[in-house]
Length: 156
Image (cartoon, rainbow, N blue to C red; front, side):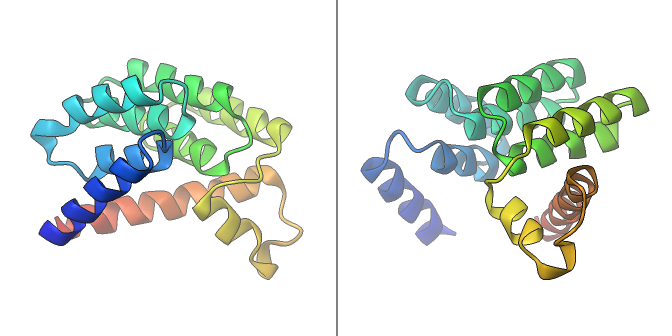
């Protein structure tokens, strides 16, 4: 664990404007320091969708669902080509939202046609998902994200 903290600190020193690194730092920080990390990340890269998405996740953890929805919406508005952000938003709507919100996110995602994101690419480029519609792909990525989150909470 100590080695991971040191490695992340070194990575953030070398790439202080990396939204992906800051988002990971927010997600992996101890609960007590997450808010401070998120404020620092927002100062460094205010308009990065990965950071905005990680902050939305903090609001979900605090059960501030309307605020989380607003931040997820901001994240997908900033860059609608990142499938992982769409998947996080849809996963949130699946677990805490209503059917109407889920349909809205699915339709907007299909219209945006996302192409980027670590998890999004791993699933969208799988040959078995070659002819799958964007809405179904979003559902698959979001469910994988939910599974990962459940596994991570079991370990912690």
